[in-house]
Length: 189
Length: 189
Image (tube, rainbow over all chains, first blue to last red; front, side, top):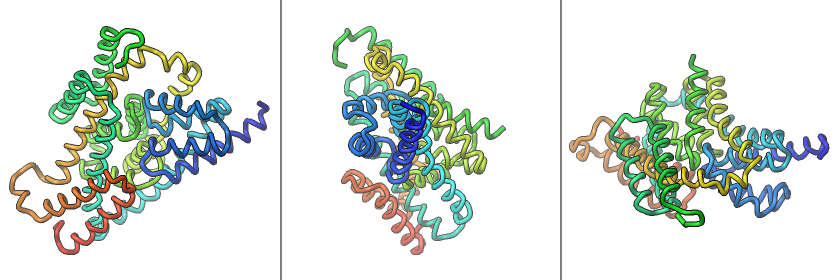
């Protein structure tokens, strides 16, 4: 691809992901259908079959799913330049909106109206986190190992001061060891 | 140096959470409280705002915490921190993604990481729930207050709405409106 062509496609990636970042609520998983529509159906930047791989990889690499997919798709389309354009595009709307809101809330938090609104909103947030918990649980493979790791993580994070990072690393190591010892090539987990 | 600290903290969070934005919540909670960047109360407000604005949850909350602690430059550092690990890792994975997809190592680590995410978010539900319903400390006397029962009522409606797949922004708006109404009736004190 010529450099002018690459710049053009990268700009288009930036615009597409800016739009996706500006109009989807609820983060990464909510973006996947939109990403598919824009990059596969409307602009043919990647192949239909790639989108499943992209989701799988975005979920098994660390970090926000939205950023992972944007970087990945950008790279597939026009290399590092494309991944920069797509990632910047998906981040920028969030960044600007939050910056403005945080600035305003700092000054309006004292007002009764805002305080009361947040007293209600905080309760609503509990519900959304419960929802996230249930959908994560549904996606998670079931089995004695899963249940043990999940309950150990819950108890350790609530009852002890052990850092979350050590709990995550510990679970990764336990998962790896049991997988390598107890499953053979081709087994289902 | 606050900027470097913000960057490094969010870099660590971005590098070690799997499964997208919500999976970051327990980790962010851990770090923000440890650094004394915000109280649990303020953190729940951050979560509420990040939840009800467009874009990836992870980017929203990173920008919010960064902006509260270090202004615009703080927001840039925190956001860059949470995005960079994803960006680098995806660029590496994109080069050799068939090998990555079929790797037994990756599958093994993921068998541990999926359940640990479920457990940690479960823990977040408990700590956030405790802060919202028992603001001072857990005690039976809370059951005699109107604010507890009103909060419980909002929570039940919000949970039902969340599972009926009502849009998060509607749930947040409903909670805000009810919160304001109850506030002017003197419920929140």
